[in-house]
Length: 117
Length: 96
Length: 125
Image (cartoon, rainbow over all chains, first blue to last red):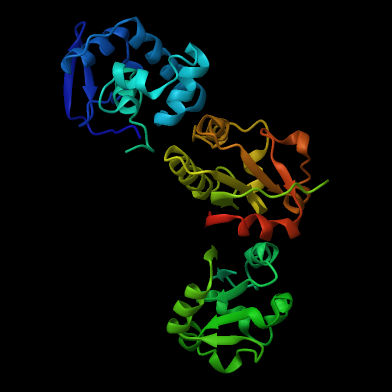
């Protein structure tokens, strides 16, 4: 669920981007690729082509279903869009270690997935 | 056997029809809270198809001063009986 | 309409409330999604007013409230594809199969008990 509690701000391209306590955007419309890069940089991640294509899958998913996917549907959506080679949890774990559904949703500017641990 | 639990009276809520539609031939129906109004002699006709598998919770009847008006066809159980019914069932389903 | 052979599964979620009027439908769908996200096989049964969740053409509410249609669309992504609908409730609202946004197998009342017996756990919403 999207949180409304502003914990801090991040400055990206001279814009103040409000973040909730877990680092998700307060205003989903604040998202730009630059915001994604800044969020990734905070965690010491650098976004490559394979990250961006997953981020795009996530943003499509959200615009269609109005919800961030848990891991299983994320794997399925990635597989449907990018092919079965990439539609595997191992691929997503490698790109977004720890918790791909949560990490990738955050970078994609989406709310935290509601139904995953 | 499934224990179905209904907490609404047939006089004001049609949810009892969903419970009845979902009941298998050996399933049991327990009336609790306002559902016990359905156990009164004047109301029990709604549950005719349940036969001798109809139960009502004593505490809820007593609280409403209705234990004397509960129909003889209804098996009245107390909270311990509720627990026993639950233990005897494969699972329970609530209708509200 | 012929009644299909009811399936078996881990969890049967029974949805009895219509979209927009209360949060019951949304909560029921959320419960189904959580279970599916954890790998449970989930079956949905739409009965009573719940069959309206399947109606085509649903929109946001007058104040922009999100409905449940997008969530219904999302079910397949969670591999929730075992959907049943009570025929008598469909008839009650004058709905036919072609009015539904997702394919849901019509169930006669007698088959509902069988569907329930085939699932390890049942939640009603």
